[in-house]
Length: 593
Image 1 (tube, rainbow, N blue to C red):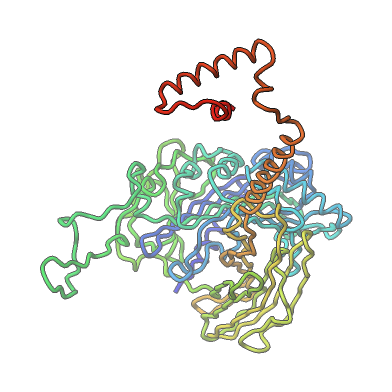
Image 2 (image 1 turned 180 degrees about the vertical axis):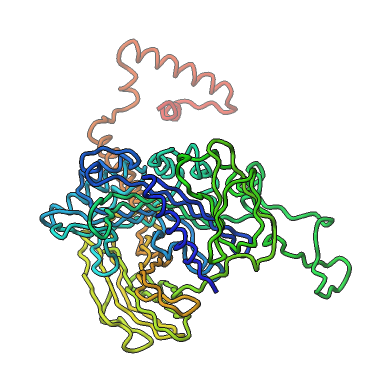
């Protein structure tokens, strides 16, 4: 079976052939998935010569990002915006072997050239603040408590000078919500700004309605073997898994509704007790699709010049798959038999139609090198535990990888409780303890899982009690824990052949419940205290200020007193006339008082 990675390796060969002709290339790969899904991978590459980059003479390389990297002395940058979950059981191996994927939210790691660690940390904060304004994200909240220094998880992909003093920093914001505010500046970095070319398909309504999506930006220096003609390359990638039924649903009627009885197609292979029973057939997996169905629009011309002989639109499926376009264009079919690419017209609109057909023509689903499940165990508000299940699906080959976790400072792990279900599987271990309100804990493990085995990794931790002002507005929701990063060294494929490149995958984030105080108590205390003070103060104030005198003394002085006495007398007479028994003498005076 052919793995998913193979088509992207072929794609990289196609895109690399156009560097000699142009400093910009773009590619779109559509891969049908089961059931009723499509993986759409957008790739954009731009470069500038090293001399032009240093002199800030930008043409295809975005000036806004280049100036930020130069000011922060960042020699290599990797930025990710991700949401959703990749279903490895149904979709197989991750696109680009996981190298373009990030954890949920925002993830960034970079190499900064600085003479000391303190200077590098200052440049790291400067870079995060600048990128936060450029991409409308909250990366300025990546402080020292969210910053880690991995040792073996990440390696620089670019060609750097041997004399450079590079410092690696890694940060993540799991709670960051990826939305259209991040897509708009992403498109502005492209030469055509998303107006023409394959970038014209990118719509925020479709992208962020996908089951899984990730946006990546990689900036690194690239040099040939003779170290001449080095360029600074930026690669922008968008990968998303679109549900066909959900994409075809009109925007004005987004809620799925059941089909009427006359449109149901029943499964005739089942036994029914009566005529009113029906098991509908799931026909969503086999249906036709077009670019307008998936993205809500067609491709508006080409962003490349006519001299560039490239094939920007590709379909990762069997060459026997039926594909129709709006007009007859040049086509390329890979010798592997599972990749066909089409050219775009210079100005005309381009539409692609893939009719419904047998799943046998789709690209076979590959087996990931490892399956990972990560969860929080335990109960109570004081302690808990982390449990990780690592399953090696290969029946013949061991898998070696680096397991990296960056824990927040309010999670205090007990490393003496670290244990594995299979002995002697941890080859190396690096642990940096966290400091309260200064930095989080960092754990890196070099692990080898035997063939066709399941390794259980677990350890305990203690939960810290936060200060009153350190709780978020939704304190009872819990705090997010960043996903773990796994760098696979010797990945295997379905053909049991070792792949010579490192593969990456991320686990899902965790939700950590922390001891939460009763936030209504301060208001109750304030109300009760204010009431007691008001009663005590009012009583004491009345006793000190008011003077008690008799009624006759208060009403017998001055014209005002005489008027009051007269009015009281008239009132008493009227009351006596209406009363059946008249009161006289002392009783009357007492009543007046």
